[in-house]
Image (cartoon, rainbow, N blue to C red; front, side):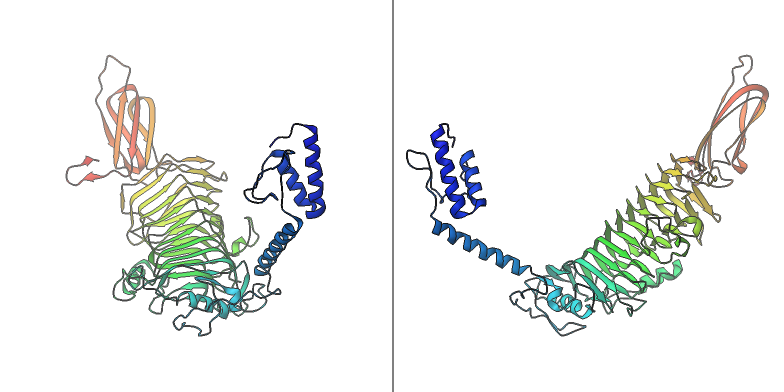
Amino acid sequence: MVFQRRGKVMSVLVWTLMVVIFSGAADGHRLFRSLKTGSFGRNSFFKPGMRPQGSSGVPKFMSRAEAEKMYAVRLKQTQQSRQAFAPSGGPAPAPRPVPVPQTAPNDTAKGPSTGRIFYITEYGADPTGASDSTRALMMAINDAFSLSTEVQLMPGVSDYGGAEIHLQGGNYKLSAPLRVPGGGGNILIHGGTLRASEDFPKDRYLIELWSPSSTKINPSLTSAELVTALQNAVDGNSDRTASYEDITLRDLMLDANFRGGGILVIHSVRTNIDNCYISHFTSDGIMVQRGHETYIRNSFIGQHITVGGSNNEKRFTGTGICLVGNDNAVTDVVIFSAAVGIDVRGQANSFIGVHCYNKATVFGGVGIWLRSPGNTQTRIVSCYMDYTGIVAEDPVQLDITNSFFLGDATITLKSKENKIVKGVNIVDNAFYGLRKGVSIVKLEGSFDTVEQTVVDRNNAYEMALKSTVARGTVQGSGTTWTVDFSPFLLFPDLIQHVQYSFYTAVKSSFPRHALRSVSNNKVVVESDVAVPATVAVTVDQSATFIQGQGIYS
């Protein structure tokens, strides 16, 4: 509506003034704005469906009694909303229905809940952290895992339909681990902080997923012992069964208070650990054993809270993430303090966007340690190794690509019982050093087998480039030309394939020439007569031959 005549504008101002007097300044201002713009929405004082009436163009609006009645209704609604979100000292919320679950393994007492969202303060948990909340948290967890359901995920794993244990943004003290009952899935635990008390057991984790039949594997076993232990540790009737499925731990801060670890996951499939901050552990920030597809994302893990360069870095201990199993993924995770960033003792794991500055190599730290000799099957992509490197034991099928290594951080290939390097690709990485001549890739021990291995297309600043493929050119006049690749090739005294070209500008002579030697990573070419010539050579340390034919593939 647009008022063009001055008389009508004056009428609008008069009516607005009356509304201000009888209905409050705020509502009067809103009416004036509606009249000025001609918009009569649901927030105006006009009755629904009412339009401007009369020759004066002034609309009819509700009476003062109607306005006061509407205001009273709105005030009551506001008070009810505030009461529902009042703190613990305020009015208590209305009682909520109590579920009828099965007997919980750790406690039989029950607290209130609403539907399938279990608010732990209603079980008596103290969100200030002043008193112990272990019992209350376990009651909520046991209630969630006792819901009635006939739906299953994996065999023997009940589907609880996305039930939530809601920590309500509190800070809770624990004197014992929160052990999640086995045989359930599709559960979310989220939204708060868990801190270990001074009497928390030192060999346990704040949150533990393991069933009574689960077997915890000692990660300090040798590779052969570890394989045997994993084969013998079978839950139920088949190693394809699982104790948990689709358990999500999200938006949590876990403070182990230097009393133990953060999260323990045993024999679970499709587990999500997302947006968690785990600190002050002495064993592991996260320990995963057996199972499949534990996905750790968008999390920060560190024994000590630091941003690097800590005076205590030499004394860092523990492991950020320990994976004793297969098919797991760590994505967009920062590990900022620990002796070992990620300890990997399984196959087919992947690491993408991981930033490790847990403990510098010079102090004995390792960023990512691959300890499955002869069966690595690991992909490390777009990671940032910050003064700490990667160690791979007898690597077989390992990809390290598009990553950045800072501060003399290197890749070490370590020989173990198999003495093998096979199917390894270390390509397209960038290395930035400290002007000490440190090699970008190192060997620890000797290897009997080197096959299908490519170390190439990396770049280095103030570090020594190493490669399995090299190209060189030498010029001279005589009968012998030598190209020394030993400063550049990774493996000592190992050239499995050579290509060379011989060029001379002398037209009066057509010399014969041949490859004479490839020992000690030096290529020697000789001619039958002395001529000025240029010899270009390409070598490969990891050629694959068809046995008995010598055909380069």
